[in-house]
Image (cartoon, rainbow, N blue to C red; front, side, top):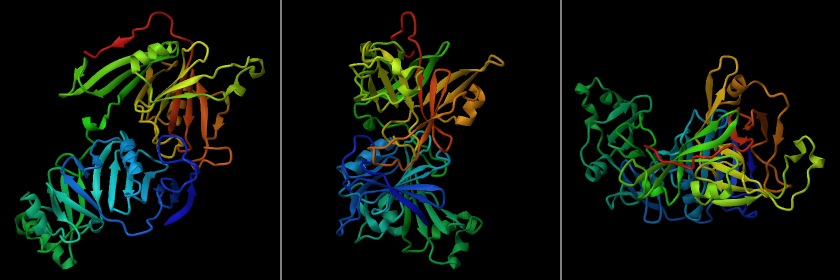
Length: 468
């Protein structure tokens, strides 16, 4: 049951600048009574559209010649496909847990086509592809249709298209019969309760599942990695999903008397020096520090996806003597590395690194889906016993306060909107400063971003470090 709906004005879905006030591709944010948040994109179709005609590849993908949803694909790439083909794929919902975003998978629900894309709540890669309404889509395997308007997906058709497999499993609670192949499962709906006892495991030596009624049709289909849908995990990102980008597997914050820099473990597809995880995967490390020049950063990380110049410093009022600061003729600027989940701020006069911003990409934040999730680790020294704890992407603000102590000052309330006349449907966030770090905290107690700042690191920097 729907509660209230709110439109996010003047902003398109995902990365990029606002695209006016058109309706195509905009988001409608609805708070559900169950605690899940739903965001629906697109406008209702004006006329009947042809069905999607998709190829099923077990343990890999669902797609056609123009696009493909691949297991292990990052969330942002799936959204890009939906944006690009918004005239064909319409009425998309985003489902997630507002209070506990790590407790449930993040789901893209293609309501017009009867397809759900389930993304792992932690690594935000595609884990399961579910087709829950086979009447809304055409499906084929090895180029031959097994589900269309003319072909019903019966048990006989599945046997003919996919061949023999192990006996299925009957779930009495769901009253569904599951027929499993490697990386592919079909669920059949039983017509009546009178048939149920024949599919109990203790009937006919456990092989009664072979006696599924003739003509039984598929209710749901799942594509996943491995042998078990219940135990499946999102696979590593396929090489086809890199598209020339570099991704950060992990980022360690270098710490002396405070944060001094980042050590990034990076992943790329292609040949070149570095550790080869498979035939083409390249794994290597780079380090950048506060005080590095923009040339140093470019040589370490390559060109940014975007350069953003600050038009004004809205936090200047919180400095000790803002009225004494001499106005600069130049603007500080950011290097935005979206696939690393990192922003780097440079001083306009010295062109050296002033700050690092690490983004966690939680749903329910204003910048959700612009950045890839940054898997960071920040060492925190505990003064009481001299031990070191670690703050990660998944740490909550309450736990961080237990380690660092409560801030002396009240938080700065951060409001974001695409224009002065628009409101942010997600609400405000709160910025707390502790030990040369600024934690942006969401209303559900999760960390939206961490900003690291401090004096430049003295001495020579180790610029490049290849993994052994």
